[in-house]
Image (cartoon, rainbow, N blue to C red; front, side):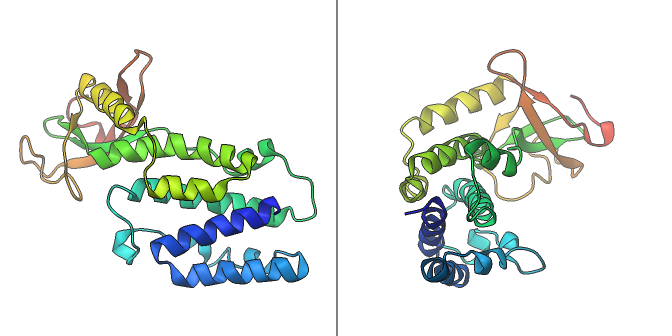
Length: 229
């Protein structure tokens, strides 16, 4: 099986698992084209314009069969697998390299995203924010390793099952670093508005990056330069 076919089959597996029937069937047509002609025109035609493959968001709000715990991991996996499929489709019959593939995928977000009250300075992230931070770091590494090892399909099953033995400890480490940096960790759905501490509605999304000091985060955006830091 070629790398391109392997990537398509992994994508088909993911889309089928989450109940995305339209694009699953599209990928199946890609596979039929590949088996019949060895070309990738049908797959490449999925990209670009409104309603294209790149506009797809796999999430519960769109009716996909994804749990809240799976959501940030599936989001990152889908985006990175799209990049792999697109790169390989564009290089049918051409020389490929892992380093070129990685460059084509762009940079991975490295910030811990959360909210900050601009009135009292209260800072907050949710367990889902922590998982998104971990997923952005973990999935990119794992998908490249799976691509090189020819086991992309196995990675789909692993991510859907959240089969990462070290995940509980990784979550604890990030949560501890957040608390050390004065960031509360609290379950919440939607926006942090009003602020749970002072009840102000003057809140905004904030981003934190790893600080030079081990086990801590530093604020990297200061919305409206208001409140404490």
